[in-house]
Length: 378
Image (cartoon, rainbow, N blue to C red; front, top):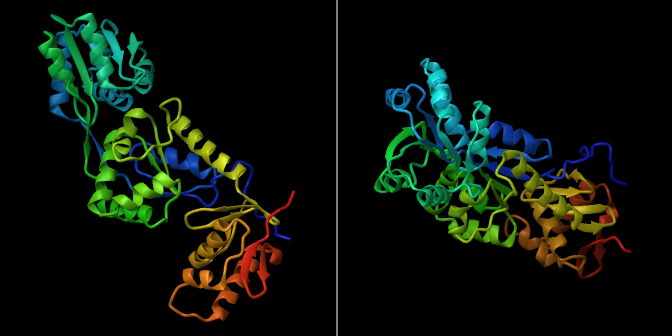
């Protein structure tokens, strides 16, 4: 009987899963949350976030805004709004900035921006639940911005056309660039990550920003593995998780439908991904030795990651895909390395599988035909 003393703790539903985190900011928090559920994390930020805390232009624009207070303030991102307040504080302008913002109408482009506004002791008067600049523009233009002073805290991807739209509608527009997206901190890691995703070494990829998703997919295309990556996503071999609909757009444009949480939060994103794997676990192949799950690079039997080589995982994957039907020796030979047709190699591979599982009855030898997994009955 398999030794259960080393089984992971309750809730380790992602045991054996390799998850690629493509974010730079808050990646440690995201990774830690997934690791608590048993996942192995691979980190390859597709972009870097370059703050403007010491940018003279931002300080000057903030001082101008204090001298000429806005009627409307658009907060486009939580991280950007917080960084703006922190930059003002570093230059002794925070109190005056918060006073000016408190007297303006604050529009938040999504829940994360609203959270940052609230954290600063302010209140958002309206929130674009779709998290799109288009919704912000539609609402403000419908109300009229002619003659108003509109300040826009930009996010890393740029203004999304808000400056031009409001200026054409007669508003005085004050743009504030708090941070911008820069190149990947480690381009080699990104290139290696897309190859790993194409080669089946990654179970899930997580995205937290639209620019990051776009940059990673561009790396996929540059490496010439778009078809392989998209195919793995569409068949469900690799799960793609996105923090929300805006982040999902670059993926959807390429035929990938990401898993999305109901709310655009990291915690909700983790829960959505964990929930996906909880469902997979509930429909795992039921064998005489317990539920069997085959991940990208490992196999999990009855909650325990089996000590298998990559070849062993592929042989077990072959047997599992047969669903209890017989797999011929020639079929097993096809997934073994090399070109040998030696039947002894098959016997050795199967013996190692049985040893790793701790259950010789997991794989049954069918005389003169091959092998099959012994499924649970009833």
